[in-house]
Length: 288
Length: 288
Picture (cartoon, rainbow over the protein chains, first blue to last red):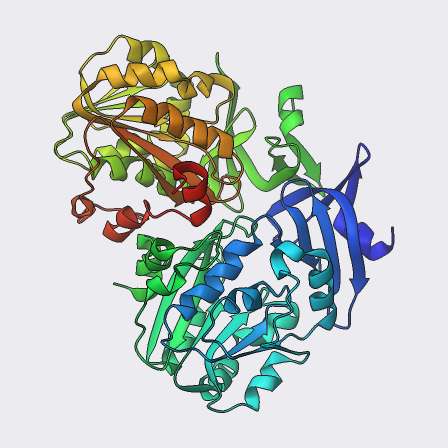
């Protein structure tokens, strides 16, 4: 085991454990069956591990990003909700989302004509297509254009082009840091058509309240209507996760659009209920 | 440090860590500031720890039960939901619930005349009143009768006495095992008045699917109407948690009853939305 690997893993009684080192005061350790892929890209350290609790997991810089057991929850929630708001989404931009799961969900909507998927790290896409079929669906829909580039720079060049932008980023450290900046949201505003909308993951309402509030504030400063919604993501710290939608027009939800789509987590009621927020979130963010 | 304590804790770089040993394949470790209480009762090993991530935590047999940071979510969800269903709840029985948080929530309803709280372990109640005021509210409402007894045996002696029974148990191992048995639910059915209803926590829809399905099945075999609902409990594995309601009459929800109650998690919309289940739960349990 090389030095990098040795910093992520411990061995006890001939068992291999990955310990996430994300936070100083809470550590989650996963018992690992097998290391399926390990490598260092230009941007980050990448692994696909087979775990006993969550099946296969994509691990970037030692942090679990998605798993074959629960990845569908996050990917369905970041995709179907905006697709149930926009009345006629033809052009969709996904920034990040290297596991291909969000793109796979967007492909379930026949109105969509083209999906530009801008992921900075080509190796993440290749590895997920090969080793995480439950998440990536081994995505090969001809409507998806893969663009391996920095999402921040890509968005700056676009104007009035997209109906929906999905920002499927990792945490605001490492390569995803710039995807939480105000100037980035300004680029997205410009890249969207006049009735377009954007969605991003805005971290945990419990552990990252300041990031969530700041994201909401930055987006609502630009867009006509901004709304938070939540989902449970079992492998993320605290379980509860937030998403923020910014829309150039009014946010009118049409949950019926999800019916007859093949999904594991979302359905009409879940799409409706995700905007109903716990009291502490209302008080923290909306100050109602 | 005695041998028992040594089995729960590890010391690294002069820092104290509690590692939960609940599941073989996934371990959560909490950095601990201070051990506020430690002792062995007749029934279990009891600790109150001050942690960096979740504040004060009640730990039974090495497993985190509730914390000052998120305990209100579970306690509000197991209490306000049944109280928003029963039209006129006067007599409430709580089985378990030694942290006193569920009783504190029930006390917010002025219609309630008496709460019998049957907890097997007196020391848990004493310790939570003293060391976990954020959860227990240092409960001293005169409507609450503390009964330190085995909830299974207590329930067997009751007939046609309660409007609501809340089963606030720990996991189905150790002292709470019998609170998941069919014969126990039969006792509760008998203990309830003709329009009464019961609620219990029924474990994680992700990690304990079989316990959840079995609980639902056992309760629906007895009661006229049975429904599942969910909440996010950040300190429980997987975040998503299930609760099961069994009612002698129809389940008619009146979320407006929660308005003007001082709460941190529940509000009218949360009470409504908690019955909207993810697709995989519908398919697993209701088979719709």
